[in-house]
Amino acid sequence: MRATANDILTIAFKEVGTVEKPVNIIKYNKAFGKQGLQWCQVFVWWVFKQANAYFIKSAYTPDGANWFKKNDRWFEKGMPKTGDIVYFDFPADGIDRISHVGIVVKAMTDDEVLCIEGNTSSTDDGDQRNGGMVAIKLRKRDLIVGWGRPAYTKDLTPIVSKIVAYYDKKPKGDDDASR
Image 1 (cartoon, one colour):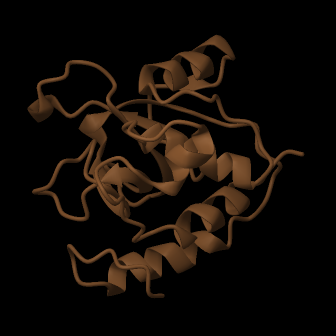
Image 2 (cartoon, helix red, strand yellow):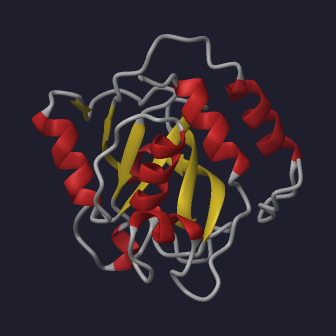
Image 3 (cartoon, one colour):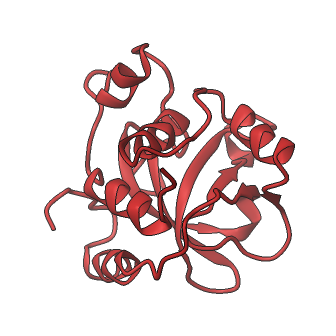
């Protein structure tokens, strides 16, 4: 079965506010088969698994980017679209490579993308690539290395407006799961 972008975003949105306890011990890693992993890409894999759709089973974010490149589904120019899997490099973290991943909700401006991400911080002050929770993040384009476009079944992605409204209404820095 091929999922729609709406399927993926609906599943991911239900997970917003989920927190690991203790560090890197979380249900996504349990389903993956190994606790203790940094789990941003494991979260994306888990979401696709819940939708009965394929996503590479790897916790290492460059593996995901390379899979999209190998399958001619990788993009670096312009802006990602709803449902794309976006890969980040955070220069301030001292790791000079792709080190985080998220699922695109929507390009909000020519320079900002709203994403649902696993293992990030709900604030901009916390660890962006190992922050311990599922959160909705507004990211600057210059942090994006590139993105993969899954082979979704076409749909209208009605969940996008609900997620954007939730993001706009919540106090910044508060990513609790109550909706």
